[in-house]
Amino acid sequence: MSVFEHIEFDQHEHVAFCHDKETGLKAIIAIHNTHLGASLGGCRMWPYSSDDEALNDVLRLSKGMTYKAAMAGLNQGGGKAVILGDPRKVKTVALMRAMGRFVDSLNGQYISAEDSGMSVADLKIMAEHSNHIAGIEAKYHVFGEQADGNPAPSTAYGVFVGLRTSVEFALGRDLQGVKVAIQGLGHVGMRLAEHLHKAGAILYVTDIYPETVEKAVSQFAAKAVSLNEIYDLDVDVFAPCAMGAILNPANITQIKAKVVAGAANNQLATEACGQLLREKGILYAPDYVINAGGIIDIYHQKIPSSHDAMKAHIERISTTLVEVYQRANELEQATNVVANQIAEERFTKKA
Ligand code: NAD
Image (cartoon, rainbow, N blue to C red; front, side, top):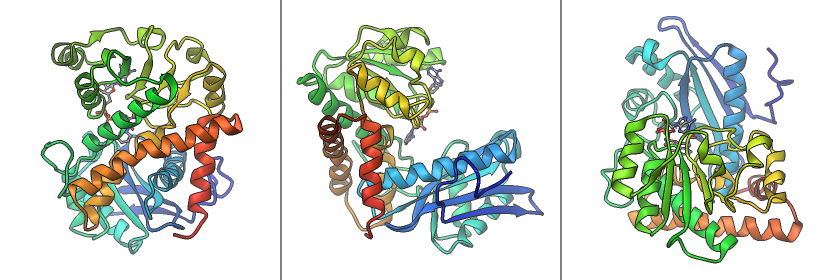
């Protein structure tokens, strides 16, 4: 396993391999870029099948955070941590404490938060050993939800405003009567369904858990569809809110929607899929731009701010998307390519 020659290595500033003999903790922390500020990104715990798989994930995810922070207008860099192990089997309080000490050893150049396999409670244990933990308390919230540090309500709100803007841009209409297919009704997808329903959209939904589908059917008048049907429905918008790499050359040919706008990270199987979407006349909202509500939330919880300031910042996702869409039209380039260019312009300049 090489690091500097690794396919996902892209001028990362710091990659720390962490091992604690007493607890058996094995983790990797990657800081991609701190040009705009200290790096911020979640800590993921996952049963990786190899060290290389974990390294691959942390290098890719930390780079993604640099782009996401830059596009969200945050004076923050990109970083990420991964803990190797099944969170349901090997997670202990001692392990979390050891992880907290490793985060602290980086003296604030990496600020950690929640990701898959990690809860607010886990991060609170890490915070006993480091001041560089975020997403553990919430002073501000969106729409009256109990604020507990979980950024999903803010992510969902950001996706909602970004989706609304994308529909205006592509179809020149508001959301009343617009048909939206939502893939995945988890923390973000279900809240997105609620926003869309209130705005008058007609929903088609799918999830691997029937009970979540039933909830959307009964509460938001959604129509349930099968896992495979979701791609080629006769709808206006496809909103991927489940897993990554779901837009590939095969299913892009199936999609009838004119807009793809959803929460999932890394939606494109390859960067070239952005161009395929463009050639089909589908407006693609770059994932790390539209799903930045959560990181904006975490940022505001750490600084003197207010509910209104946080909400206004999340709503600026719309302005950023329009900037991307207009430049993509001018340059006749895919929106993901243009988003990367704008992010790079921002994070290579000093804050
Ligand atoms: P979640 O785990 O709560 O929800 C995901 C949902 O997708 C689950 O209900 C799951 O059953 C469903 N699902 C999984 N595979 C599916 C499939 N093949 N077809 C249909 N449904 C399927 O996750 P979440 O927090 O809602 O996040 C959703 C996506 O948004 C993820 O890709 C995540 O990385 C991304 N994201 C989340 C946040 C956040 O604040 N939670 C922020 C940025 C990006």
